[in-house]
Amino acid sequence: MSARAMVVEDEAALASLVAQYLERVGFEVSVTGDGIAAVAMSRSVDPDVVVLDLGLPGLDGVEVCRQLRTFSDAYVVMLTARADEVDTLVGLSVGADDYMTKPFSPRELTARIQARMRRPRSGFTGAGASEQSRVFGDLAIDVPGREVMVAGKSIHLTRTEFDILTALSSSPGTVYSRALLIDTVWGPQWVGDDHMVDVHIGHLRRKLGDDAARGRYVRTVRGVGYRMGTGE
Ligand code: CA
Image 1 (cartoon, helix red, strand yellow):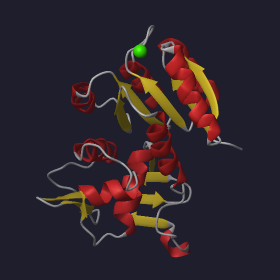
Image 2 (cartoon, helix red, strand yellow):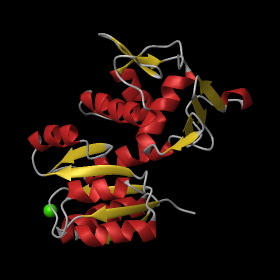
Image 3 (cartoon, rainbow, N blue to C red):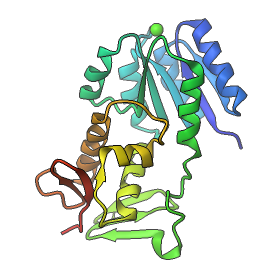
């Protein structure tokens, strides 16, 4: 079964250009130019990847992303018209995984998406059987099943949040700098703001019931980055 992508963009020429690029690398692509239609379409298509324009008729990209995040862990790349919008969006915690500012190269967009999709769903380290289930206090991570439980309760993480947790937990003694996390989770081709990492870590902690001060599961190593906590 091929991976599914959705392109949500009201500039029809740009939408079909991006769709063509994604089709060429093997995605099954659905396109819409309307925010309300995008939410409905994402429920039926269940996309792996969503390229989402910020400025849309119906619902804007921020609201589409928020609604999408209630039921989907698709990889969301948001398209913005101005570079300074990205900071605002990162601050708003809309749940996008990546941002590109127009005008952008559809080739680069496609390369980034491919790099991200190539990351195996079963983790990054070629984990053996003993590595597949990881436990840190009340936190249990089923790596191949991409499931996370805290105190027996299932927690819904986005793809990026899960991948960050998988990376940190694969080597609990290692301190991950933001650059190393970006390399591990997004791939070395990714160019963007390091602070994206902090935003995703913030969401991850909130969902795990962790907090920055205690860092039971995700510990801040001041001036360096993050490492896995013991759950204590
Ligand atoms: Ca637009």
